[in-house]
Figure 1 (cartoon, helix red, strand yellow):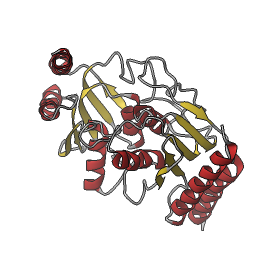
Figure 2 (cartoon, chains in turn orange, yellow):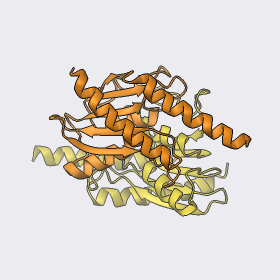
Figure 3 (cartoon, each protein chain N blue to C red):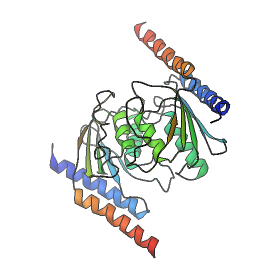
Length: 157
Length: 157
């Protein structure tokens, strides 16, 4: 694993998360690359503005990359996302045959791995995804906690 | 539960599955209704033709209904789908706050419930969905098994 490359692509994912925040969306960003590391998709969560409960950054990255490759099979592709994927996204990533996921902050309340689900390597499903977590955890986590802190403040005001 | 209503809406979902089959897609169809039983979306799997691994009938029904209601929260809405939802779709259904699912054929190899996952009523997730299964199981199951039988025949020929 090339840590410099992962950190570089995670920084771009964080930039996307900031874009989400500007629009009042929960700040999660994603980058999807092919096997050579070329960026196929840069996306962020647009659940509120679309509105669509499925429009998490990961699902949007899969859609954009599939369009670009004209294939639903994103073989040899890697996903970089600022937050641990929820069960829907983890299963979507598996459906799309993505090879590796690198995620930022752990999500103890909603992340597929933190919840003890085994969607990324369930022997009964068609595909196994390699998952690496915790990249730039504090930066990505702080972005989210600040967002929710401000939101609570606004509710109180 | 009004069985006549469920059977009627399941028949429309089956019609959608036939539409998918005509296009060479795995025949799965879905109908999404509001609390009054008005149809908000009729969709079928378009994974191959789009192409997009996430474009299962259920995800497309959620997208269409969200557009119509201009909300990602599909509160009081019910989903009728010819096949037991996979983990991605079950988690998406939960994300969209759908109230009830009625599904047709059980899917022992890929269905979220058949796999023993607990995504529809996991206490730790934000929403619990009521799931009823097995409606017109044989009809919906036969449609799928015939599709795969023909596909295998074509490969052999």
